Length: 138
Image (cartoon, rainbow, N blue to C red):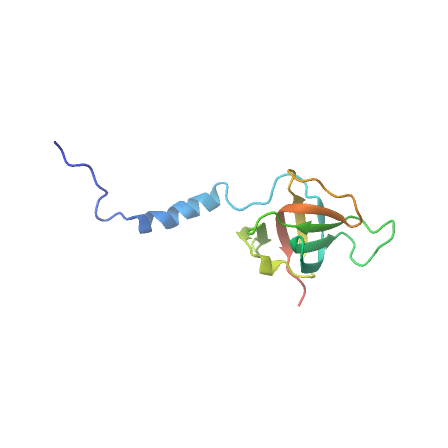
C-alpha cells in the first residue's frame, strides 16, 4: 500500500495563510454595503446604556432639533463585535474597532433589517455596519 501524500517540506500553513488572507481582502473583502445607509452624518454621542450596551448617535445636522434637523438615529449593537469599517487615506477600507466610534467622526450607518426601527426622535435602530468616512477633527 502506498504511503499517503504529504505537503512538500517547503510548504507550510504559515506560508499559505497570509496569502489566503490577502486574497480574501482583495476579492470580496472589506467594503461597506452596496445599499444606501440609513443615515450619513456626524457621530455626536457615544456611550454605554444599561439596557442596550454601546450606543452611538449619528446626526445629519448636529445640534439642530427643529423640523429641519434631518435624520438622527441612536444605534446599538446586537453583537459584541460590530462591523465597523474605516476609510483610509488611499480610499481603501480596513476593519475598525469600537474605539474608533468617536464624537466628531463622519460616518455612514446601516441598520440590521432583522430588527425593527423605533420611530422615536431620534430614531433607534440596531446597527449592522458603521463606516467611518472621516475621523474627528483634531
